[in-house]
Length: 107
Image (cartoon, rainbow, N blue to C red; front, side, top):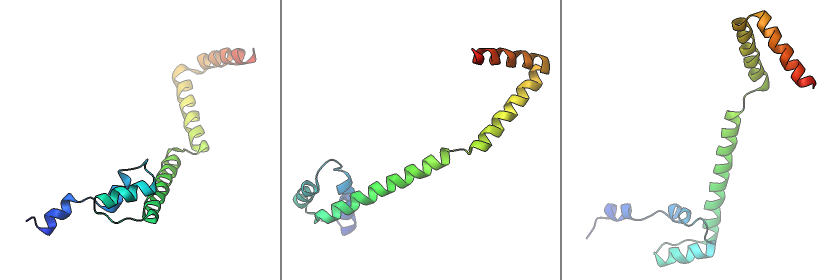
C-alpha cells in the first residue's frame, strides 16, 4: 500500500483541475471532478476563474506600464542622436540633408 505522501503527489489539486479545463462550463467541471472523486462546487470554479482573469489583467497592465517610456525621455534621446549625427556629418552636410528633407515635406 502506497504511503499517504506518495498518494498525495499523484493527485492533482482542485485549482489545477479547474485550470486544465479552461473551455468547459462550471457544471461540466463539477461533474468531471465528481467522477475523479474531487468535491467541487460551481462557485469554487467561478472563484478560481475570476482570480486567474484578475491576475492576467494585472500582469498585462504591469507589462504595458514597463514598456512605456515617457515622451520627454524618448525625445531627449532622439535629440541626442540627432546632435551626434550632425557632429559626425559636419554642419554643412547636415544643412544640405535638412534642406532635402524640408523640400520633400513641402511638396
